[in-house]
Image (tube, rainbow, N blue to C red; front, side):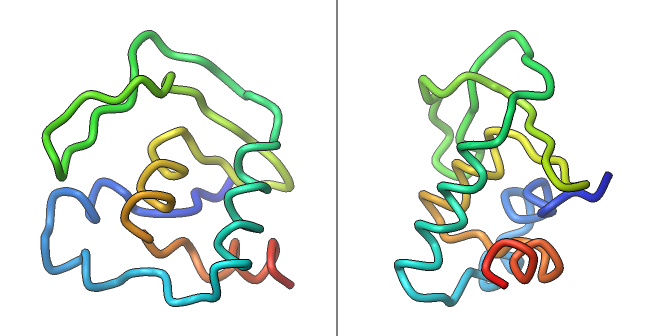
Length: 96
């Protein structure tokens, strides 16, 4: 399995936040649709915590797997809220 991002670096190292997604809004929607429509691989107790804003969300912490890639709710959240850049190979796979 390949992970689709390094969200841990994105939230903990402010200089990594410059590495944001620069695509058309439609492409971002396509990525989010793909990520959210995948089957749940595993569920964990708890909710996504926004480590940048320091706030709790009401988003369940779920892991997903599809086409050899693995991600969780945090990847979806940081892409949607902060335009976090995803792995180039994954983006090419989804956006082709």
